[in-house]
Image 1 (cartoon, helix red, strand yellow):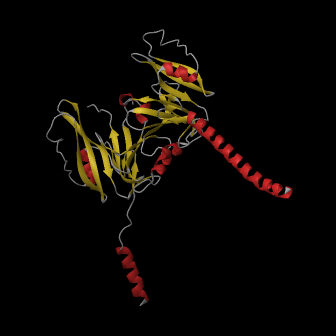
Image 2: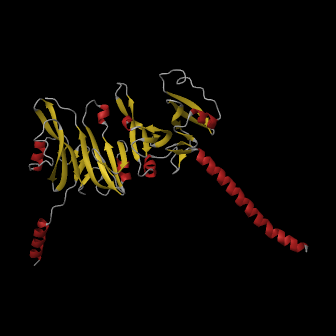
Image 3: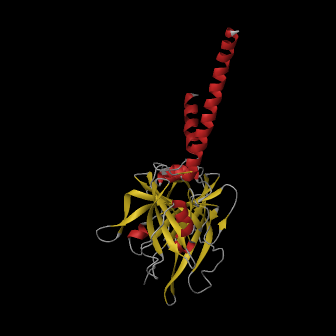
Length: 191
Length: 194
């Protein structure tokens, strides 16, 4: 009987769901998903072919941005890509934005979904921080009661000419994080 | 009879004393409140000195004639900084030459008497400022100084926190040294200036 119970315990333990792993949010990415990666590199990492929302990137000339929804380690993410033309008929498509709202995503100091705005400010004391009412998107601000945006800017671009610049954006409702976005302004590449 | 009068007097005295103290308290409190208003920091200015105030009004307020050495002389120069005494505190005021008149364009001071309506003043911290200005646009940044190689270097001790109601308009900039406010500047900000 004891051996049966012991055997049962071993089987039960091996069947229990694997502990969910926290993915680290950093200025330049989420876990292994890094800003600046090419579309092909992202598709290899995610093991899926991405479908762009507006589908500009395959059909229009010039430089444009487009988005795709995907799943990274069971975390729903919205990815923003930039197509940059760097020579006649030559362009690159690179990841410039990652947006998510999963509580498994946290910074190295534990900032994530549910974190208070003052903890974010305290954790990033040495950084350039911008706070504003509403949710600041690329071209407009989504206003609403209790909504605010806290942006952490990597000011490396100020000290190094032409360097990639990164921004970590937290969207808050009633002073608590509800989602985040990582953004990059990438330096122009040449052939 | 005399005992009665004595009793009446001894009951009356504490009542009168209480009334006198109450009156004194009201007078002192009113004075303190009036003084606080004179040193009140807001997005509009410092006490009675308001951004946009014409030079003529400023001179009346400060009860002094201000002699301009730059903008009244050089037609190209548009801004001049003057040092002044306002209610016994030192202030720096930027005056700007507008089309028809000269006006207050910036007010700077580091006096500990100056505080915002929520009590932010000399010695306040960044977190206190941010907590006091919920719903405002806030820009908190380290100061970048030019290093020996003339490239900008992030200061380890100096930073600023700028607060405004909208993307454009008047702003208060708190300068911090070692995480504590050491001075204030109040001035207009235009969106394309950021």
